Length: 334
Image (cartoon, rainbow, N blue to C red):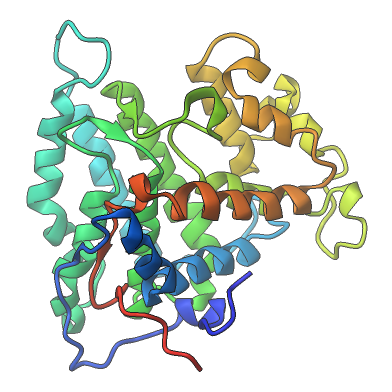
């Protein structure tokens, strides 16, 4: 999947900057549509997509409920997300006339804005304290926009960038792969869903019925990788899920019985809770995916779609920030 001349994906999970590394507060670099070329040639793009694909391989054929290593750093990240969750309980929605965009989100966000560096400092060892302001910016960018009270795939990408940066400074390691997706990212999704429901957040840049989902994309990629191993993927060495083919995710019974094992089905469950009417009407793109014969083809197609619809779209990437860990500089040819 990684383009030629780019670092192999595995590198993006084990890089520790030297102690003399000059950290910096990430900033906006993509200001016009022609700037998108800089992004696609950048070290940041290579490392980001490498990180996504490395995790995609790491969870292939694995259930959310399977056993995996949980490091101290993973537990600290979950504790951080638990604090964000508690703050939602402490910041109830305001009584206001408009249906969407409850202004109490701004109060909740202001707390994160103020505390982000302190939160990240609980995860990052003291000898890497200089990295905290740089890494914390991605956490602040990952929860939605306080002005518009919206949330979308650009915010989700900021959280993936936050995790990628923690890998690059050595806080997270290669053997944390499954826990990064199953424990940390999954907990992040739970907190974001609670934010979306509590404050009635608008989908950022959603294409409505023609978009994959109003809010997320990555759990569909990693969730479809988890499901690789169905009988259509008969050449697979992974554990078989003979009862779960792509056509089954639009089946309410299959979703209810299996959502605790598979991230993809958790996403479907959330959509059906939030939307009414026939699935084919409110989630047309997903309905079309249910006709694909195997999960490996679904997974490959979603990676292509993510690149085209999220990573190569100016409205999404114009908000991405670049620093010393995810730099805008072009990839060095090997």
